[in-house]
Amino acid sequence: MFVHKAYKFRIYPTKEQEILLAKTIGCSRFVFNHFLRQWNETYKETGKGLTYHACSSELTKLKKELVWLKEVDSIALQSSLKNLADSYTRFFRKQNKAPRFKSKKNDVQSYTTKETNHNIAMVNNRIKLPKLGLVRFAKSRDVEGRILNATIRRNPSGKYFVSILAETEVQPLEKTDASIGIDLGITDFAIFSDGRKMDNHKFTSKMEKKLKREQRKLSRRALQAKKNGMNLLDAKNYQKQKRKVARLHERVMNQRDDFLNKLSTDIIKNHDIICIEDLNTKGMLRNHKLAKSISDVSWSAFVSKLEYKAKWYGKTIVKISRWFPSSQICFACGHQANKKTLDMRKWTCPVCHAQHDRDINASKNILAEGLSILNSA
Image (tube, rainbow, N blue to C red; front, side):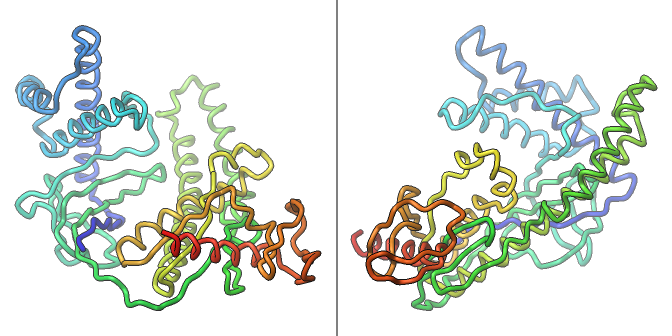
């Protein structure tokens, strides 16, 4: 089957290319905001919004008036219009909130350009991008398939990245005839029905002391800049420290993403059926005592990776109802005991006297329930 795959690389633009990148980001933001304002005014006056094609025609006229718009990638400007039109489509379908104006103060700045006539291509250790030409990049792997578009992004750390979206063909993995139940936790990230436990690396917690120290330093520099009557955007010491804090957050994010990718790929390769709880993560985050720990483990991101990889490689994901009492049922005899508190990690069934590790027992029940759902479907 054909799927869309994203390939992310760090790029190292020259000073001239950085200037052009900043111009393109700024022009893309200007176009988005300009037509968002027009769209809102038209909707107030007529009860109807604008169409993408109407905006596209208007953009052609606008470029004659504002010649600096011609200095940047024209496809990037069209992509801004497409993003605006898509945002309104989702808004009217009640899938998200109304689009908002973009600010140059946003930590992440980006634009997207479309592949046309091989204007995006890999050339040894450089990547060819519209208007920018050849840009040096860290090539960690080959891009497979037909390139569709590229998103160039400047992160809060000041680093530049390109995300290449490609259409590529993937083949289903060989069948293993293996099934697994997974109970997600905080002390251990994942507990498997075969008795294995995957450690929670606590990426944010390990960096917490350093983050707090650097964030306090950032606050002091913000206060100093205000005392000197400086705009924070112009305060060099503040901006330098802000990038330092952003790099720490970025390191945590990269470590976590690498861990989740490797674990999800291993599970998909070695199992045909994966049974997992459908957790209400948003609801659980309201528990202020657990919110930081739940946010650090990123259950939602992990499940999302399992789902799209299972779809790619012909595997099956079974989601178990969040109300299923996986921790309360004895896997050995099926007796449902009284509700157990979170601090009760081991227990003995009062009926069959089987001794249980709470989480391993839960993962076995999740597997059994998942297979039951599949068999009854």
